[in-house]
Length: 119
Image 1 (tube, rainbow, N blue to C red):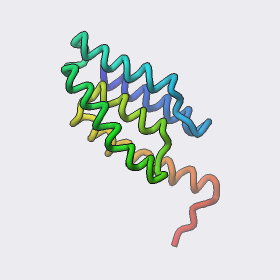
Image 2 (cartoon, rainbow, N blue to C red):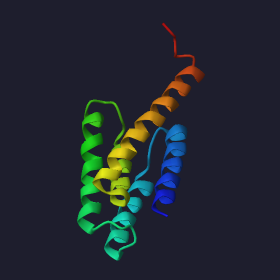
Image 3 (spheres, rainbow, N blue to C red):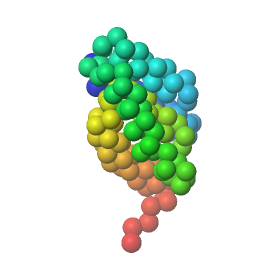
């Protein structure tokens, strides 16, 4: 169930981001709260500490990229929210997958807009 929630939220966030160039707080904040609440209720298999650490790891991975201008703030908050569901180790794996898929989407958008010039 957790995988389905994270995957669905990721697809919804990607769709919104591609259309509006934003990942809204209305998606990321309730998602993070739901992940923490589910940890409190024992619904994720994570302790509350692991859910909170997952948020911090997600934040810690993405915040430097945001500061350097590589990602938006919504992306930072989204990965932190995913951390509440996945825990510290799971959010690291999610980041790697997200980077691969995001790179593919960025390449497709660049090609579609005529901004990709092969060397």
